[in-house]
Image (cartoon, rainbow, N blue to C red; front, side, top):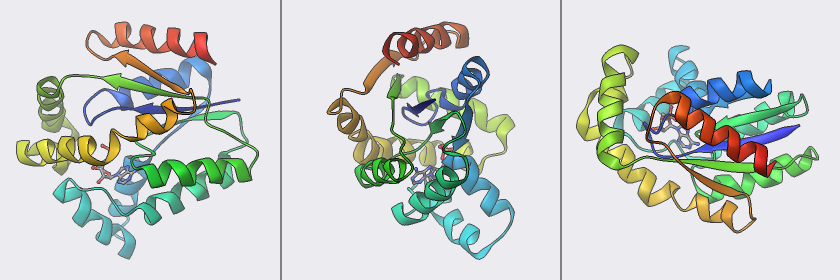
Length: 191
Ligand code: AMP
């Protein structure tokens, strides 16, 4: 049983690497961004509210995302481990996440921070936006805002896990295979 956080700025390759880690270790994968996009696609009241934030490149309010993750952990938390992708994104989310996991006798084992320079992030997201149909990937202005939000509100979450001795940074520049090998080596040596 292993709970991993895949961390890094938008466009660092979290989604791609999460899929590979999921297959390699046979554990679950949950992306809060995907859960939110599904809620928007269902056109619920909550979905419509969250769409405003996503469109503007801003974070959805903590309580909404924390509630989603609490539900997920209650349902799947004890079934073999999970990769959390895109969560936690604020210190408050990280604190609440520890509490939620502890309620189920669980913990975070490792945070993997995929590090990529800003210009490369922007290039990758705009490229992805051509095929993904994600509105928040299509505009350079929104992409840069998302990266700024990451630096302002999210980057500090790395310190939270570093303080617990659970942080590892990996170089996210290279082929998908190269980055995957670095992540796998980090997980195998630390967990
Ligand atoms: P992502 O798919 O991880 O790039 O997330 C897309 C968007 O969903 C973000 O720009 C935020 O608006 C929202 N989002 C995803 N995860 C979170 C989170 N943990 N906290 C707040 N907002 C989030």
